[in-house]
Length: 321
Length: 119
Image 1: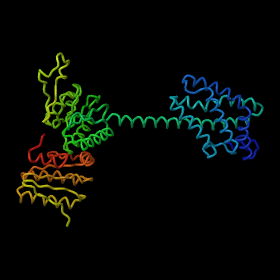
Image 2 (image 1 turned 90 degrees about the vertical axis):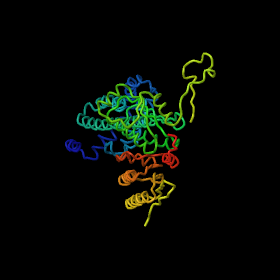
Image 3 (image 1 turned 60 degrees about the horizontal axis):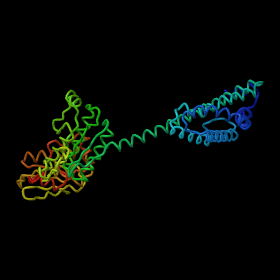
Image 4 (image 1 turned 120 degrees about the vertical axis):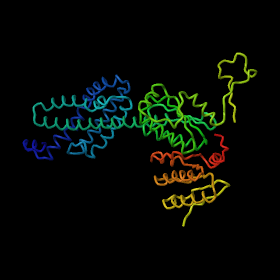
């Protein structure tokens, strides 16, 4: 395309790229930098001021840096191709800006506008300068358009990657946060599950439970599913797997915190929980666990009770085997 | 030929697997154990697999089968000391060893067999 244009214009190829592409653009940037900067900053400021994250001074600074890098890249090569190593520094700079904006909560459009909003002022200047010369104007417009599209798309790509990294990190944190194994009593573990049980989480839950069984020598573990919103066949299967694995380690499991709707779902789905002890509340499960480990809960002797001691649980005490 | 030793403690037999199990070894152990149960008139078998790091479906099934055989010969079997990774592998393989009694360590397994378990 560019070659054909050059032939039409009777200009040899290398010269064409040099005059129409790199050098001329670089010159334009250099001469009109302050004007471009003014236009660009006012556009950018309209976008970023809503976020309140980027100060005007910083915007100006970023723009000057950006234009310097673009000029350097344009000046150093005859061909304008964003995918060549010449543009590495521009790419790095854009990656930095996108990354920063992704973290500040900008949308992909607002991030890409960092590049695209330079197009309009640039075309205006170009049109004014080459008004009498339509052929190079068209060629130059096309070159700039291609270059800026490539840069804009690149910022979007980096933006997406940064956001994905954030999501992956959050998932990881959620996974670690949501699987605590707590020791309720000597030899009794509790595993309060919160959120949906998928295969990856089941794996983590299973590993941490079994590890804790080894560490504490617990004989019974209570899996509390109060915080599990829905139990389908897959979740039930994951629960049963965890119970089976704990049993292989010599620890019995009690499943507690089954809400009425979940009990109905389990029966409707035909899930077999016959071989597992199930209790409605964690308290019931704890009593079963205490019995299994040879302990029991007794009310305190009336004499020991302080006068007016509030709450029935205050006076209770545990009696060991 | 390599063999896994079977120790006798009164009416109980104690098997400690401390080498990597391969299929031949597993079959030999099954033969040896069943003959010893009959010969000694054992009432309980304790299989300690705490040194076993890797199991495959064959070894998993063999552990289950051995326990079932022992029960037919009127000897209660307890598998003790299973590693967490081994337990997860067996469950993922669909071998939850139903009907096999398990305990965390030899001490608890012994208590289970001699009937002095606190559980």
